[in-house]
Length: 262
Image (cartoon, rainbow, N blue to C red):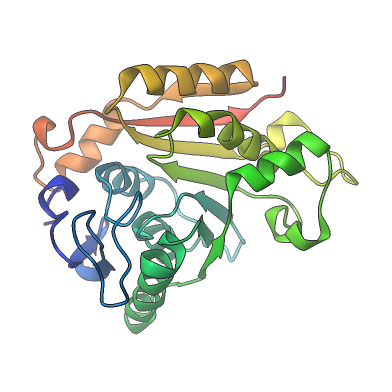
């Protein structure tokens, strides 16, 4: 059974089982904030496994997985170590996990490479790729009302089917750019039309280290036109399968959202 991430921050590599296939373990490379890698990279935000990523992965694994050969496209914001993205890929989703440097090169990319080998070696789906994404860049696209040719991948044909993110509310100056990024990703290309029923669900996991910041972030999202509902008992039920008690994941919340328009 996996240990809570708070107990494993010091380890350079964690072998973490898939939530619904405990016999299959993913090697998750970490760089702690007080250590350096062989390449000289030092730990920063997103280079160790998050407790909220474990909890969200357990919950999402309990939902109906893609079936019938249908393509279900997922974009992850702030992918970090890539654990949540790899779990979703193992369930049959087509996943793009994004982050900025140095996280992308130091942990996200390498973990996706090694994780794909494990998934394929166990005859599981592994349609997953890492990409660079800066929310402030997308924020500028949103404010200019433009669809940039170089960023076509941000709005795939048919749109995203799901957006996910863990521990992305950590800096006050990034709250608005993040929500604007989610609006941009949720809405179709300007040349197409859709209804609000087509906007993708957004799953948000967070660890409430700064309740004031978290409250501000959620209120900002609501003010920008997002419907946000906290997921309740089902989350705890899934985590309890790992033998965890309430203290092991105290402070972690999972929210389901969807853009409804301003």
